[in-house]
Image (cartoon, rainbow, N blue to C red):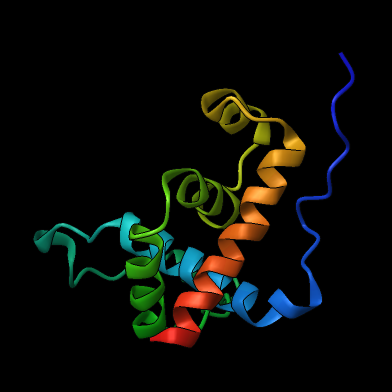
Length: 125
């Protein structure tokens, strides 16, 4: 069986702005999933930083990430799952295509349509 060759990283030019906001949302969701440190270890100091150069911290807009999270929550299920896979999970598409019972081309279309739905909600609210 020949699989469809689909470039999931391709973004239509009119979706570039919403794509940047969805990437921020993906980082926001990762930040929220990480959890917090146990209270007893909160003020401890790690000496591991002296052996490694400091890494730049990402600047995440949490307010916008929360707003996008609320918009994603009201999307249809297939679009919601496709966007969560594309921006949060970022795994192989084969698992999601099997779970949703869609082809690669259909999954790509769901991601594009999901971006359009998020953009529509952002413009109308």
